Image (cartoon, rainbow, N blue to C red; front, side):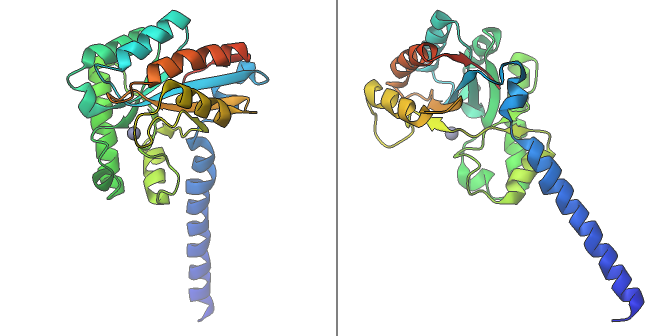
Length: 234
Ligand SMILES: [Zn+2]
């Protein structure tokens, strides 16, 4: 290799490194929520973020909204567009009550949305267009169906390059698992996975078969209040 080619190769490598640094270093650091960012003024306090995926449903979501109203706390709903099409009144109620309406998916069909970055973004945009139609504003908050864990980096960077920030979870009622568990089990799952955390992002679901989730949520809100948590939204 002569000197000219060597210099060209070195330049290409330097540019490639800079691109990677920007893509995975800077954006990577800014793509997920840091708790300091979402809750700057209460950095030393304990905060729980109640999150509900896969709704809205006629049977479960209104019950959860009633409980949140009774208890005076706010939550984040990661919605499925297909479910919301015929239930815009529930999405309206979520937004008007001060909860966050955020993007989960339009179809929730893993094999389709995860087949390419282009398909994933199209699915997000379709869900977000519906959110905008119903609430008047788009969301910049996203939760990957199944979480971001183990997904190809090209899918994750497609989302952050599209201006969305994504939220996973660090505690769960485990109400997504096979079969319907009683409220006791969901409550205990949430308490044990929240243990010793000052910032809890709790995963639950408000899809139609989650019949124990409203009661578990009512008891969990009391638990978090008694243990000194405030309630945050994304
Ligand atoms: Zn989901």
